[in-house]
Length: 309
Image 1 (cartoon, rainbow, N blue to C red):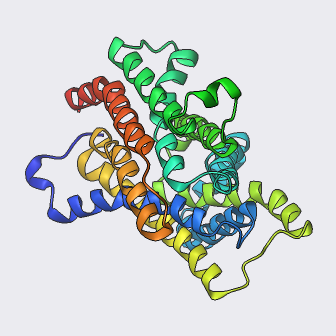
Image 2: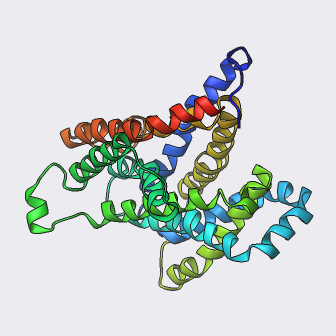
């Protein structure tokens, strides 16, 4: 995708660019805020079932193309739903019952680093010294967050299971992102594809959500619960996807990727303001190391993207 000329970029484009990391960050804020009120996999199921229902008109408008995609790529379709909406949905909400939204956002930022690592492992992609150094620095930041700045935790293995769960989700999202480059997925229009993936996610999440319900997991039973769910659907799902897609088309994928770096400070600020979380020194260390490492690791790719655009 080529990057439009500078004169074609409007103030509204920059506004949506800034809204992208805010909307993506609301997922962890709402997810943390809803903890204890609705079971995690029930939350994720309702999120993606609601998103699928709202996106249905776009899927129906391209029904022949969508049916052909599903029939010809059932495994890919369900795997994308499992990774992007299942692991990065219900599993993340479960992890948020054990860790903070601030920690989760910082750790989740490493997804782009795992994309580089997986490309190196699976596709023989060459890794530059800058990328390797950036990955090591960012993972040092993740370690500082997971250990809460206490190296004794490493000796006594007192890790927060929720932090490690978010790290698993970051890896899952990296795999999900790579699979989105499959020719069949790239051939689909963005909105119908998103609707299909939301439906896939709802189908994958239905069994664990049903299990939670049968085991007495809390269901939404108040206006506050439904308001938070509506926020997850409207902001973290639909609005985030629309803003990111618009940013890619307005600025190109290289610039759009910068929105990932803006998530940690925005998410931590939102967690402090809306959830009453405390900003710790290790958060500051994590922000500097994670963001600095991600920027260093991805800078060569961004540069080459500009040259090839």
